[in-house]
Image (tube, rainbow, N blue to C red; front, side, top):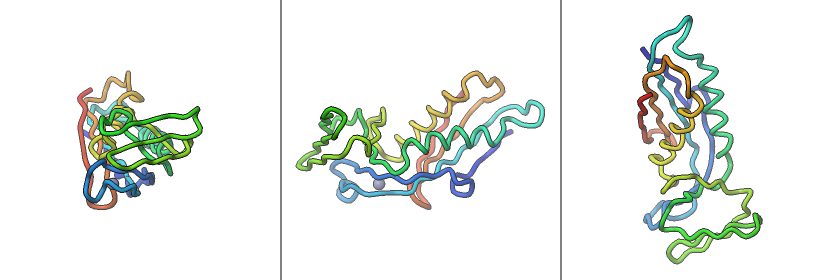
Length: 157
Ligand SMILES: [Zn+2]
């Protein structure tokens, strides 16, 4: 049995900008509205497998951290990242140099800021928040980068 929450319909969304180094189109800084959809597989205990509101709360908190920010993958070997006393962040990629106010940037512990890596980030965050919930067997997470395209992954519990 499973419960499912559609990120577009349930407003589990955020807007942010990123770039994919050396990509012919996505190599330029650009933005998306993202939606996070979640399916939780497990056994029903009492009324629910898990309360929808609890899942929405967890996902909303993760979305809020990234909303209206520039997303940078801290482990991207293609980037050189310099941090200047928390005032600015300098990112050098190929022949480009971005200098951004540090308050505008969120560093993700990932190797990329693709939908695939954002999906890993969200699934890890959801799994961490659900640690100790024994009736859950699997979580599926899908990160849509705009309407009609996204990346999904699943985690065994
Ligand atoms: Zn993009």
